Length: 420
Image (cartoon, rainbow, N blue to C red):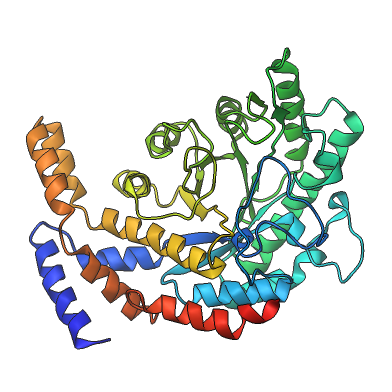
């Protein structure tokens, strides 16, 4: 650690101490907050079932930047490189179609923990845990636009079995890694145009979910989450799994509720939902993304909404009840850089929240001093947060400032450029 970083941090520490904030305590807390990094940024949500498989389900990746991962080993190498440039505690978020079958054709209703053995063995060395997702898109049996809510019982049964097996794979990861796996379920079911019957598909979805969750799995190993969406490409007018549906389902069935930052109206934000949902839901899962006019899954940056998300978690003491995962995919830029930018932005937002004198601000708000509240919130934005962040990175032995970009460009030259 350079003398300049240490000197700048000493000054910042003194400034924050003057307003009652212990920077050492904040950094110790930040180091232990696990962020679940999504594997699908590394290969444009391709998976490893079929190299010619089209991406469907209202999802779209734009851009053709060279060097995307083509194999599990390439993807794991890229993830390792990203982890080496990101401080703190890392988890991995994995989709079911990233299985490894050794060339054997395995449909989604036949996946087993053995198909994820290589991921588990790798994770023991590189992560604090693995989270999992059944994959109910990009498959011939999802082409109708319906899976768990389909009127076709045979089709529903196929996807129910896939989800049951996904929960067992989540349990497998939990047992192997000694950390509960959050198994999150999202489906793209819906109509492009206005439906006549909105109720029946939701009734079928509810019954399918109940059947999936019927098998008891110890929460020590697996935590079930359900994720809503407002609309998707091809389901602009109606999505079966709406926010209201899953809010009610999570409350009545005791699952986690997943709030995805891109899954609501353009003027809606999930930061405003966290405290409300926390009153009725035991634990929450966040998929932190950056929508630009729609659920476009842009790389997360340190914008106002990201800061508000972090503040809601920290101000309300919800770290032990909120699981933070990232969810974006940008094929127009270096994919490893996308991971690093997004993960470090999330950590910066959390650090800013940890460096806030929240008790003081709550006190003056309760006293009705709204002038003081606004004045202090604005002044604290100019406090030397950057010096604390650089000290954290240096202490975690990851590049400080923009130095990580030099490493990414070297990796691109030495590794990614050779992938053709």
